[in-house]
Image (cartoon, rainbow, N blue to C red; front, top):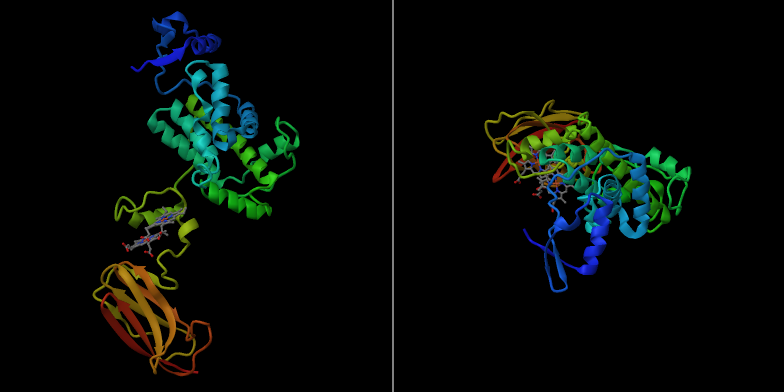
Length: 374
Ligand code: HEC
Ligand code: HEC
């Protein structure tokens, strides 16, 4: 084991700190040479000890640390570490809470993981075995993505003057971020509240969320400690569909619990009005539309015999493109259908006459002829 090198002065200072916690005393000294003392580091084994904490007390500490230059990451993490230092002492005594300072602004202002979640998860990871920690972190992060924040609880604490820092004690608008990302969370709130990132209300909002997350972390850990923890968070229902192809059982090219739709939209493959009706396909085929001739709209069925980029376009008799129904959307092998309402891409009804629907898949093109009546 590596020995840490301490000056006499540092050593005396540290032993005074130890004495406040569990005593280390002289047993901790393994060698004295010259004017240096070598202290055997206390054998702090992971996971660190936890005791149940008062979540409201931790919330107040987090809010205070946030304004005491520890920001959101070290604020949430430090609030719990400081409470554990008081309750347990060693091995918590010498953890520099600043280890989470980088978490501010979603990682030094990068807008990635919310610093408070970084802090809460770090704390969970210190006190729980790996398997448990995953479930607890899922719960914390899942809650953060679905909860209107800052919580009504922290808003009320601020209004009642219960926090020690009083930069802004008014009520604050709430928003649901649907994401653990700092960027998403802050910008959705800034729009909902009509505030700028530099406004004191935004800072206070993150201060209250720092308190919320520290408090929630403690609630989750208290339940785990009591063996009453039950996971309520689940993978978003809409993700399950995406992961059926992009997850472990197929392409396995995606690793994410974040809500796919928030970034990729509801139509990530650009399939628009094209609906899958079966996974069977005999070839690249476009079937004759029905009804035909038609006045209102007509149904077009087609098949693609592999997965890939697919185009479906409507041309007039002179060869001008009238409407693009599917523009290189990605389709799986299967049979599809769509409707053409006899309109161009601006929604204007086309004149009566002959039109062609053209299916393009890989190097294959197939045409059908349709007749519009007016
Ligand atoms: C039926 C299988 C299937 C499902 C379900 C599916 N995808 Fe895909 N996805 C594909 C295929 C196939 C590709 C093309 C892969 C390639 O080009 O290598 C693709 C490509 C993508 C791409 C890249 C698009 C591009 O323009 O290159 C994104 C983004 C994507 N999928 C997101 C999603 C999301 C989000 C969902 C859930 C809403 C989802 N996919 C559901 C099969 C699927
Ligand atoms: C926070 C936003 C975000 C979320 C949430 C997200 N993605 Fe993405 N995803 C991206 C970005 C950004 C890229 C890179 C796109 C690019 O540069 O073309 C990407 C790339 C992809 C690609 C490869 C695209 C390509 O062009 O080849 C697939 C497939 C994909 N995501 C699927 C998913 C699925 C499935 C989910 C949900 C489990 C998901 N993503 C959640 C932002 C997100």
